Image (cartoon, rainbow over all chains, first blue to last red; front, side, top):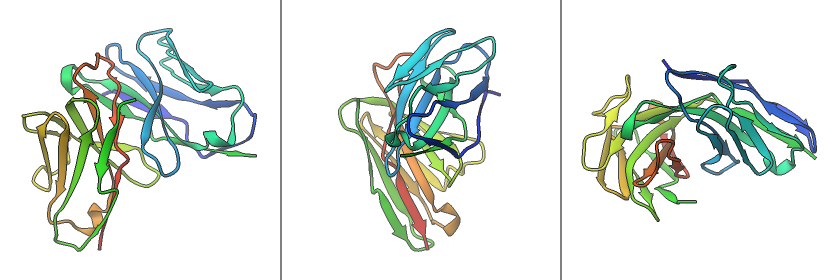
Length: 114
Length: 118
């Protein structure tokens, strides 16, 4: 079945460091890919998404490119801030129709130190 | 973005009692709502998918008689944990997809409800 594999955390970086969080997937068909973020004490929210191969999703300085050839959707940011400290989840949409559901990675905790 | 509200955010109950958690889409109509359970340092586990006006579809291993889901309107879904036990203690999260959402329709998440069963 469909699955998402995400690099294990926690990841600890200094402010202004470069961030990469790896995400690879297995899926039938052509899923959409997502990164969600959960800030401390808050609910999940969509960070960015890509719906087809070679699409690049971007938001708040974060980017991820849908790579079908490597089945990857790695999250990157050139210069992280303390406020980026959160748990990041990679997900893909599986299934069909109205019951299309998200398949989740385990989440990667990021801590950015000043 | 769209707002999904969950209530209560925290609930503590005695073993054997039932607890109801509400999930409301405040500014859009949600044809589909999803209920997840999140364990510490674990990913989200999808429990069930509910479509307005029909029975929920439960994931394998989730007891439908224990976790009752009602999606009576386009803006409200409820999860009732019946005869709760300490092992049901967890963080429950709902999400909703709008009527007009496309194939890759964004899910909007509630804030989550922390259930502690004593």
